[in-house]
Image (tube, rainbow, N blue to C red):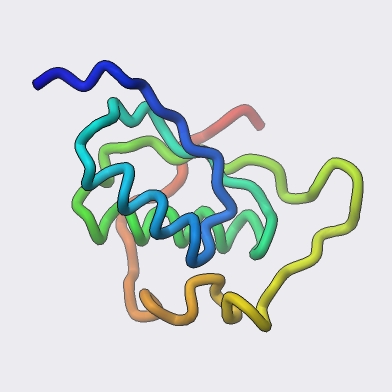
Length: 107
């Protein structure tokens, strides 16, 4: 079956986005063109690392990850560590050391 639905995810990978990535990849309903990361519930660096960890977990590290904005457009960054934990995913993949890194992006 050819996946005709093309998809780019834009995430600040915490718990909710990690589950969204897992569902999108495992559903096999999409041609995953890439994932962009931004700051949100966690910093852009943490969101990018979490995204790479999740992709490696589901053996989908062929999907490009592009690191995006480190700050919101209209406010100062605010991270929800009380809700999502220091790493944004409640420590679920704390021992994972992904080989995958973000692609160059548009710096």
